[in-house]
Structure formats: structure tokens, C-alpha cells
Length: 275
Image 1: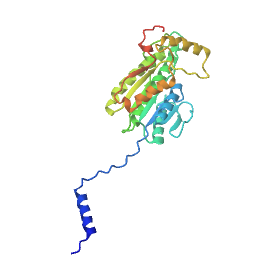
Image 2 (image 1 turned 180 degrees about the vertical axis):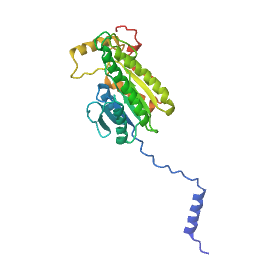
Image 3 (image 1 turned 120 degrees about the vertical axis):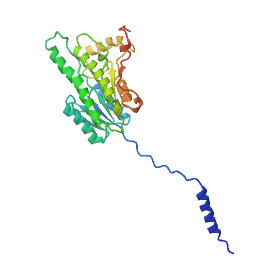
Image 4 (image 1 turned 90 degrees about the horizontal axis):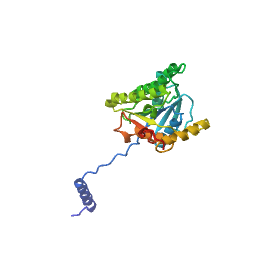
């Protein structure tokens, strides 16, 4: 009888293969989605720092401002719009979705400052404009963002309240009132939309160093003198505010909502001592 060595070897290999445990073959991982953020007042000192930080963190960013701003790469678009109006607030969200296909987070910056004392002529009319501008732009921004945030995204919103919502100065009543109102707007919004998985927070920044050509000698003197009231003895740098905003909109802050986080060098912790 002639043995078919190759046939027997093949049968043996087949038998061993059948005994072996099945091997799981992992499917190749899909490319992670690029998170998308909308930033209003993107041309402001803090706005520019936030845009730069988010781009560095791997976000695609839609920057919204009342004036044209520079585009900082393929993942950055700029839109000129007035976010103090409902139409343009919704347009900003629509533009972001049309461009990038999704929206994970919104950073809502609004900071028209400076109001005169109540006894000054036309003070109330000026105050009404400031209140409407600072508060309504955030309310409209939250309203539009809530409807546009992607269901599978970070679903986070951060507004800018300023320490003016936690402290007060003489005369500047309307500005302070707008920031106090903004803090409770954010609290209420956080409670309203928590069940939808949307987080809403505030950053209350202290005085920020600008170092622009528009700065006057008086501004520099004021900044130097005011720094003596700050425990860290200096004004904030714009990237320091941007880093905190980037944290709050990120998944790293997934259990943080309804809060106002002071980024002020210890100013609001102080009893007013001069350092």
C-alpha cells in the first residue's frame, strides 16, 4: 500500500486547525473625529487666544466677530456676524455645521464694558444698550448652540462673565449688572439642558494684559497699580484664560456644569488688601 505523505500531512494540519481556538481579528480603528468649536468675539484679545489654543489642541474652529479676522489654517474659518441678533447667532451655528459637518462646543465671549454713574446724563439709556448687548448675545448664543450641538460630541458651552460679576466698582453699574445676570443665565441654562447632556459654564476672568499699540500710558499705570490688589501681583496673560476655557469645553471637564470659575490671580479671594 502506498502512503500519500502529503495528503496525510494536509489532513493532520486541518485537524489541528479545527482544534485550535478561533482567533479574533480586530477591525482597524476608525479615524477619530476632529472636534469642532464655535468662538464668538473671536477677534478680541481673549478670542484670539482661545482660537489659537483650540487649534493647537486639534479642534476645527469657526471664529465669529463683527469684523473680519485672520484665518489661521485649513481648520479655521472666519465669519463676520453680529451675535447680538438672533438671526446672526443662528447663522453662525449654521455656517459652522455647513463647513465642518458638526459642532461640539461653543465659546461665547461678550465684553462691552464701561458705564457711567447713574446720575450722569443719558446713563440709563447707555446702560440699557450695554445690558442688552452683553447679556443678549450670550442668551442668543446659548439658544442657537443648544440646537446645533452634535449628539455624539462634547456638547459644552462656555461663556465669559468676568470678575465684574463677582465684585463691584463705583459708577460702572450697568457693566456689573450685565455680568451678574450672565452668571445666573449660565446657571439656569446648565440646569435646563443638563438632561440633554449639555454642559454650560462661565469663566470669570480678571484684568488681562493687552500690550497692544492702542494701549496708553494711563492704561499701563492703571495695570501696574491694579496689580497690587492681585495676590499673584500681575495681570493675566490671554493664553492663561484660553487654557481654562479649553479645559471647560473639553471631555476632561465632563462633570463640571453650572459653575463660574474665577481666573483672576486670587483677586476675588482677597479682602482688598494691597500686596
